[in-house]
Length: 231
Image 1 (cartoon, one colour):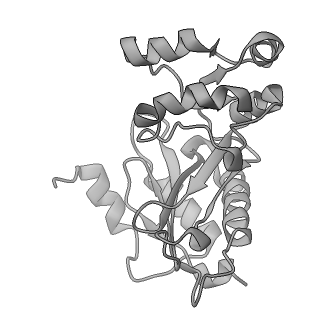
Image 2 (tube, one colour; image 1 turned 180 degrees about the vertical axis):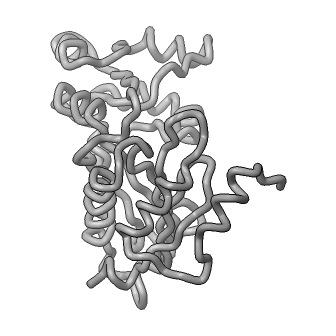
């Protein structure tokens, strides 16, 4: 794959054999974010678990101290008073059967997060084939299936992110924008890593955090000293 000049130049400033302290890693990543747009800073954590086993799953959600820097569009499946609560809390789209039909018939996906009241999950489950692959299926563990729709909407708008393992046992999450600066990114990094470490399954054996890398949207990855994170 062809790499652009900015990427190549940035890669030269990074010592690939070095494990950086978190603060140094974030400062380095900010310095390599040279695109014309405000690049997202991402965290990639490989864990020493096997996601094929139910007792080794790592999944949860956390509201980052400084949010993600992204305008989050929230869709809510609710009826009656709960629908009114969701709208009052700032939901972008609220509906039930009508919203399901828009998604099915019009391929409508103008949202980043889907929240549902528990009584709506029978309806929402019919959309599993389209919402699931996009990572949009509401889930109680992530706080997106809740009777307290106002709180769920407000948290999503404030920068709540869900972390979960992919098939290769890696968690990929945004922790903010390059414009946040090192201090805010450090706060978000610490909050997310703290949540991941706290979520360590009892069945996990050996080294839990195998590797940790931070990178900007267009820039090269910087390896973080995982041993310091577990100290």
